[in-house]
View (cartoon, rainbow over the protein chains, first blue to last red):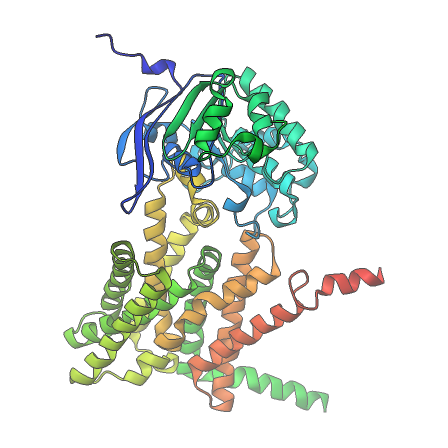
Length: 254
Length: 290
């Protein structure tokens, strides 16, 4: 039998299981993504979306299965700065005493020396990233003084500064203003053209139809996975959300 | 009259400095305050105040055993400090009891063990000086130990300053970019144990936690910049130590208590008058007049 060529896949998660002290949060989950693909991660609260992200970032250990990033181990992907994670708004202490510049500079830490002294190239990368998310006027603003949308853009800039080829975004459209939403949509198209791979979790079905080539429906395990047009059906969504139809969940329009 | 005032202030400041034990106490307390103040920014941001309390109380039996065996007391204290944290982690993971309960349970257990040991082991351990500190009566060997430990902690915190900040702020990102968060976790715990060890000499086991959280909390109210927070924290800790020691000299007060009380007053001041986060928000008041 011919061995599959894993190098074709940016992300290749095979039968991964995660449990917290014996309590299963995710089991037998599979995901394969290629460069330039955008995949939506859809499921109820507690369905294992954040756990999936945690597993892909290496923040929790998987109890079973295998994760390969560009055909290599997760550890070498971390060393190469391949994966960037953009947290959910609630996942961050917004009162922490750091400003926009500090946060975006954190994206460069992994490639700096042990004292994390920024080089000329790091400073330039941070400047460019901040410019791309349109926050140049807020360099020294503490993150506590930013709006939800601006804070989201700050963390997006951190991921850009990191120059990662895989972006994991936890609820990128939750709690943001229209301007930020538009900017994020534009960035997604740019990222796609740059060949970045994006996995985003969302509650908004319209966003899934708009951006995502692929969709992964989960409820502790993968309910359905594939091209959005094929997989994103009423039947699949209903079984993902425990028997509640999408009309009830998101209104008849969706 | 002016001359009189000047000369009395002068006496107030210089008179204590003529005593050898006072110079030593001022130096030691400032050093310990600086170390604890440095660490304090991380502990308050990480939300480890209770952990600081636990570790500082848990070192008690270590100190007693080390004295009894003739070992450096910092060694015993360090082993029990780190041991208590390991035990807290173990019990938390293996039982359904909540973390704050486990912390309270473990550290009071260790503390009680220490008190029982003092009463059982016949030695010249002065329970009072362990519990309440004795910065005025520190021996030369203790001075050396304290200086060495303080240097070690300051070097560790300085080298890993930014990594520790990132660890407190967003450990998941740290992990994603290949930074060893387990190492940082234990580094912070090690520094905490070491700081508790040096801190207990000046203010004693019961109050050392104040040295580890109050300066950081004060600084947190005064700035939105992490580096400034560290500087303010260290400075407020040193100033409190000096004020505390002078007050204890002139008004014959318990030294450890005076130092902590000075810290509390500085916090109270920040709490009321901090420009942005104080109750009276001075910045807004002034802005009104512009």
